[in-house]
Image (cartoon, rainbow, N blue to C red; front, side, top):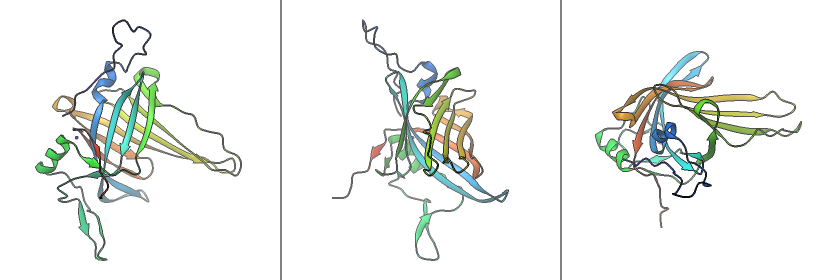
Amino acid sequence: MAVAVAVLASAPGASDSPPGPGPEATGWLGHWYVLIHYREEIGGSPGEMQWDDEIWRIEAEGPGLRWTIFPHPEFRDPWGRWETWPSGEEGRSSGAWDPRPKQLAEIARGLAHGGYDEQSKRLRVGAEGSWVSVGRRQASSASHIGYFERWRIESAAPGPVFEREAAMGSGRTQSVEATTRFVTRERIAGGRELRGDYTRQGERRGSFRMLRMGKAERRKPAP
């Protein structure tokens, strides 16, 4: 989910050009396939194991970064990803699905993705080597419900921490916040694969596997 990692550099003689991301961020740049295994936290007790997956693109943009998430990866080989329910409807398979070798080869070449529901944030350098999304939480009126997301990538050992914080509320209601975190615990194959802990505050808990992949392509609509 092999990709050349590039770092923006000022052209010779262009000292007024803004510098690109420093060496601490170069290991994140490129396209990634992210597989999550998790259990819902239901009344304090874990539910059945489930899975989800996404494509991430992290790229240099001027002096900052842009992090884009594509939530609908598409495999030519759909083995194990879907099942037919008793109702006759088709849905995501239960359990902890993992790609087989043929599917891993697809990831290495690069997956397609659906052209909807994607999200993107520009990040700028923050304190202590972290990168934080640009923008501020807007003040809401007493009757208007506002929504805000803050994305963050933090340099850490043994690998980066990826965080997405969502907040919603109004002047009349208490703000509701939830944070999704991917905390790297292990780097494999020279950083081409990251593994670690996954949490969605108060909702889900599990693990993630992040594979460097070929360039992601938007699926072309059928003629």
